[in-house]
Structure formats: structure tokens, C-alpha cells
Length: 308
Image 1 (cartoon, rainbow, N blue to C red):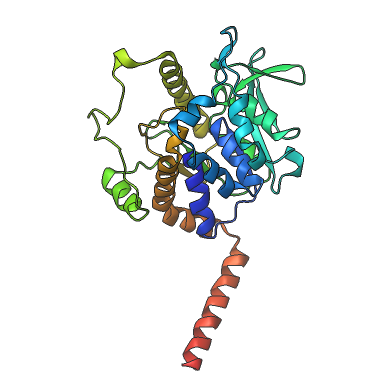
Image 2: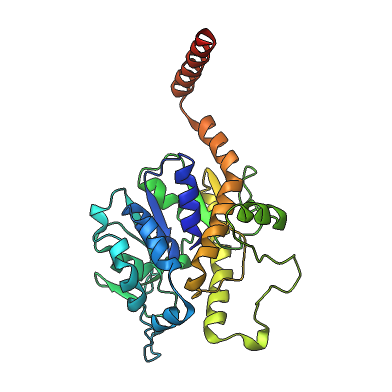
């Protein structure tokens, strides 16, 4: 849910987001944004308690997955839009064909069905049947879909990752930026929040010991390791213009009752990255636009001097 904070921070900074593509939870948040209902989505998620999250589970007989995942999607269906084609801006969700291993880009059809396919982590959620294909988590092939959003028409891509991508993964000095504890404390304090990032090598607050790890923890951690390596390889091939990396934290896969905390971490990461993003956007603008802006700023400054 950290993606919520990133999108809100960028929008409040005046950065226009004209299209969005997402994988797994990013597909869900991206759909709420594309539908123009991100604030309502955030409020619904922040209103969850631990007990209510538990009641969202819809366990299945463990044949192809432990959970169906429908009950949780019904909770936020009203905030995700109806069909992808009718969303306010271009949108795509990424899934994986379990039979062929192909990347499947979902750009039409029901939004909820596309999200259900994109979040179907193998072993945890049952796969999604879609037009004769059996689909699972898009993170198996493209965890940070930079190339997909370029296919939607993006000329300048700001990517968001919550994965532990190794330093130095991106070319041209675009290695992911890590938040230090000092930065995080300062930024979250402005919002009345607190951070729980541990020092490197220290035991994380609330972090489960090996003996306490359950099946869902193991599946989640293993998936994160694999996706981080896949993301690093994909980002080397097709890097974004800017990459915002939300630091690792202790929020678990189903800790939706901590959405406010995750959103705050996303905002903090976006705030730190914002100066670099604005500078990169200015440098990427066509020369004619920069000249026009320079002339406009000069004329405005001259008018101010005359007026004073």
C-alpha cells in the first residue's frame, strides 16, 4: 500500500500522471488511481482493523492455492472502476501465464478480474482463469513494469518498487535510493507518524523468528526474493527515468490494518526523491518548452520589478 503515498505525494507536487501500469498490489492501487478514486480507496484500507482483515480471508481446499482472494477485492471493488477501457487514464495490469510462462498484459476487460490475476501469488492464491489462460502473479515475469507503461504512451516513467532490489542494479547511476533512518524519521514526523526501520543487521521490531514463520510468511518472503532479482534484471534492460524505492519494513503481506503506516512510508520515499524527479523532468522537457518557460519567467520577473 506504499504506492498510495507515492502517488498522492507526486500529484500534490503538481506532477501529472497520464497513465499507470502495475503488478500485484501495484495493480490494485494503480487501478484506484486510474479510476480517480484513490482517496476513497485509501480511506477504506486505512479503516481496516486486524479483526476485519482476518474476516476477509476466504480459504480454499488447498489444491491450487490457500485463498480465493475474492472477498478482499469485493471490499474495494467500488474504488477500482468497472472496465479497464472506461478508466479515466490508460491502465494495464501484468500477469503470468502459468502454462507458457509468458507475460500477459491486461488492457481491457473487468478491472477486478485483471487485478485478481495479477495478485495470484502461486501457492497462496488460486490462479485466475482468463480467456482460456491460467494466470498468476505478474511479479513472476515483470515486478516493476516500466516497459508496459511505455507501451501505454508514457514518455517519462517514474517507477515505484517495494522490493529489496540490489544496489547498483540500474545503469547510468540510477541505482535505487535508500532512505536512512534519519531521513525517514524527519519526513514521517511531519505527518505525525513514526517509523520502524531497524538498523542494518539489527533485529527488526516485531520481526518473526525463524521458528515463528508460517507458510504464508515463507511464501511471501520467497516470492519477494525471486521478484527482486527479476526486477533487477528487467530494470537493467529497460530502466525508468526515475525509480522510487520504498525501504523494507516490517509490514506483512496481509497487514492491511497498517495501511496508514505503509502510505506514510511511500510519502516519505517520494518526498526524498522529488527534487531529483523535478530536475529530471525539467531536463527531459523539449528545448522549445524550456525556452518558453525561461521567457515567461523572465517576463514575469521584469513585470514584478516594474510594478514595484
